[in-house]
Amino acid sequence: MNSSSREREAVWQRAEAEGNGRVFCNLCGIRVFTGDDWDISHYPVPKSSGGTKTGVAHRRCNIKDNVEYVTPIAARVRRKHRWHTGVTGPGLTDDALPGGRRSNVSKTIKGKVVPRLTQAQKYRQTMAALWPHGRPE
Image (tube, rainbow, N blue to C red; front, top):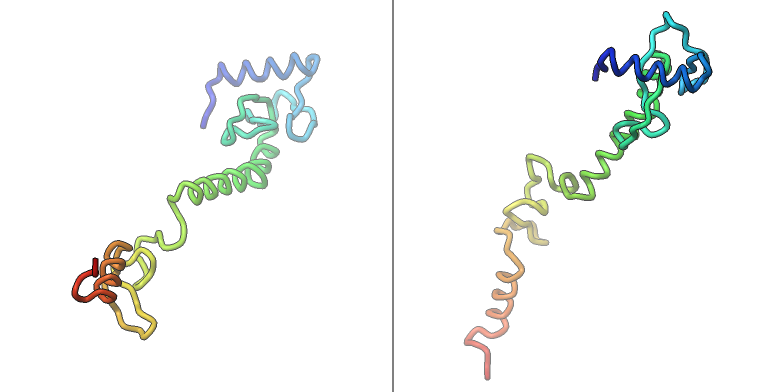
């Protein structure tokens, strides 16, 4: 996301005040000169993880930090969140496997394909097989 020039100027001035008239990269610690390419970086907590503290970083340092640290961590957090909320997981693909847990059919031990039944339906079938003429009272 591009920052406004007013925001960039405020970040530069804040970094300049913290460095006693000099600006240092908050990622590598080397001085950032006036003509250098620089970005606003979120450090030590990335913006994707809720970080709000910003500072000046060399463009090259910021890109390297994003590629090596921020992007993989953000992807892992998204992946774990999706797993724990049930958005993704085994059997949740667009094309369910025939006979899989999300399929409408089930395979018996002998290999016969039968409609998948709910637990209540299975219970009724079992009781009917045990007591074909009704349950004795």
